[in-house]
Length: 151
Image (spheres, rainbow, N blue to C red):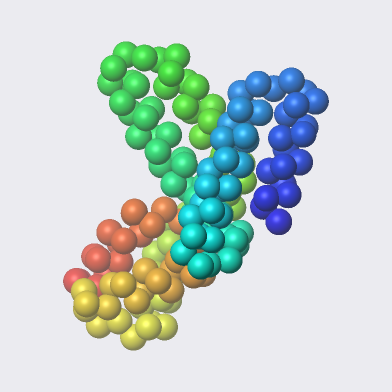
């Protein structure tokens, strides 16, 4: 389980006295616990590994946005810190799919759902999220789905 991997990595980072990794992993654990509490408040069970991948992707996206802002603001040291956090969090995500694999997956999902136009975009994205959580950037994928459905 992903939670166990992260908890074990926290212990290893403590032993290795790797402060950056330790603080990042503690932040990841905190974010996961908050997401679990939110889910429980809505009457849902604790998050599955697939749900956790979504949480990790969101954390990475937030850090990427922060890097852009820090770079624009001339704060190289803060941008470097965010990049280090991205590297630590990314280690727990599955390998990202290549562009041609994403296009094939989209074509397969369109065929599977029988999508005929833009009104079916939600169905296609839902299938992709179910099958490829953590393996593709859904921001890019939604643009590709839109292109495929409108073309």
